[in-house]
Image (cartoon, rainbow, N blue to C red; front, side):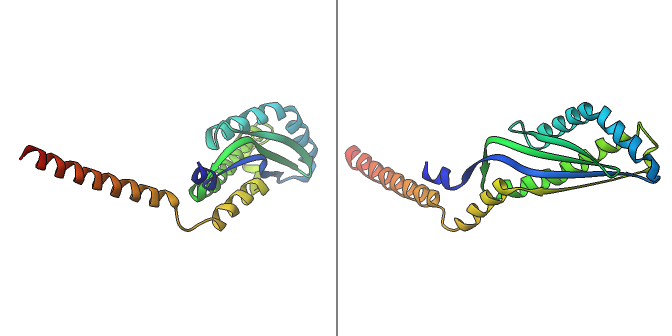
Length: 177
């Protein structure tokens, strides 16, 4: 159990923050674009929640989705409610999945906002940052790298069972003589 504790961390709270910026070629369209964003906010939230579940897993959800003027800026905070985060490979997987999620959210936003204006006129950018629960969990694993006590236990079990098997075979041979 101690090794499980060492190779996993329980994460909770906001784990990543996404910022999607939608801009249209003509500045006077900003208000119309923002009003459209307010009208479609629930559909946008629903579509992004589905992407999060498919990409990161069911333990992750939207903490908040905020819209801001200046063309339209969509701020999405993703949180986890006590999810187990397993070792270094999980960090790499989380990074790849979050990059994939950013591009998927960008596509969904472009599709939804394309209904308000021509998709060719829209410029959509998406960025994201991992937040402290993920970075702290990753740092814990980097500090505790090195010797894995499970390998020592496995070697002990294999050697002891091999020795016991050898003794059993020796006794069996001497008993049958």
